[in-house]
Length: 475
Image (cartoon, rainbow, N blue to C red; front, side):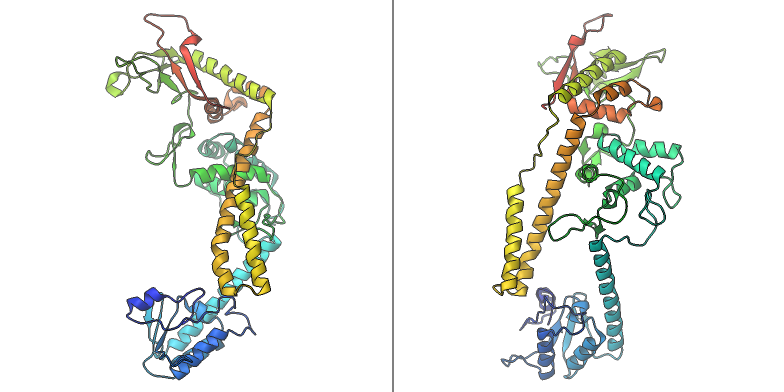
């Protein structure tokens, strides 16, 4: 009865069997030649004699997986021979009981051993390549030439620009729509979709890091392994992309980049600057504000847009309306002034992560476990049982630190953005090099929670910016 960490007692109990002993060889490979697995040999002796050294009867074996039992043909043949030496023994794995006395069991078992051995070799090969930073096979990724090492300049430039605009707040959908208009295709010749672009930007390869089984491969000091290919993004840019992607996992992205779990996705690129940001400031009979998000309607000549509160039948009050171009101009200038103020103050934005001490302690615990194993104060089995949850904890803390550092770095870069260039592009059409609407809305939401529009009174009145009440975000 053998398993990497424990015998599958649940399987035995379900079958009405009783576990009388556990044989473990957790720190010894079943695939390597020359490795003597003491508990495996003891199990074979118990099967042959039908009892344990203390005389306890043995009548079968339960394993979690056959590849933990034997990964070499010779070992599997020895196991079947010992098992069938006596009649009436029972066998089960995680899938359920099996008859090892049938004629084809040995050939099927040997086939499984061969497959398992191939899988082990494949995993070892991938791990070795990952640690050395070598390029692996497969289709050539977008952004690189056929050797998978050298950058393809035009494609790399597209990915670099897309990542930076995504960090700046532009939606992936709008980027994909632009690429489709330009007939930019994936390596397989398909049009880009939001999902495929998000996957491409989030891959560690983008900044030169090596990935294995969905995780960044690290050296013994915890530093990412750098591959031999040319990177497209800096590590800071890639961490910023991953921070955004990870924050949205399993959630819907609603209008204005707001995360939610109920409403369907809103993939549209907004046409107007302040939808969902302007709120009705008319006071209701109970003394509270209407606070309904203002909607858009066009003037009869289609030359301008109007922000207005919808009528009572759809949840508003119908008591506020304002020229859209005037409101957009006022809010835009307020946003640009705030960006200029930030730039004049300081570009030093500290990381808000507070887990340095916890990470340091976890690393010290890991080192102490390693010393205990090296000096013989701890058995291999105890070491591997203790190290597994600790490694998960260290990986989680490092991931949290990376996201926090990336967010702070993104904020620092935003603080030193050339505000003159932002101001110049703010009022240009996007086709002429202007900022995408989603990017401008990101800046607005960085500065304001909302802008309350108070009633201007009856009749036609001049635009009064004092009736716009910004709800500022704290810096």
